Length: 154
Image (tube, rainbow, N blue to C red; front, side, top):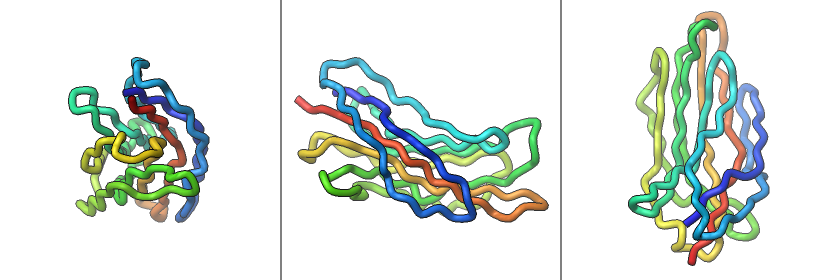
């Protein structure tokens, strides 16, 4: 099983409702690869990944947000984590985790349940999550990443 991070872009705004428009690159099943976090931001670090568990040969979407030290003091939360696959014409949610456990002083994370990526004929996966942060003098802001991972099954 192989994993490779592919195209990306991010948009920051009050509420961004985007679609995953990433180009997908497949890696051969024999390739050695590791899950890598894709992170954005300086004062609030927002990270997401399609996590490959080598022991169980499964995928899951993971997201985390952290209030960085040395900047403004933000409360943070991550919600609506979705593992999506590209079915050839659009993105379809395979697993999701709402994770409405509230605001946290420094960091929050969430992950979906695991899936076997070889269950479907199209093996291109992406993650979507809603990252929120707010400070004493700022309103809540939300950011959703757009990226994709490819997978080739034997």
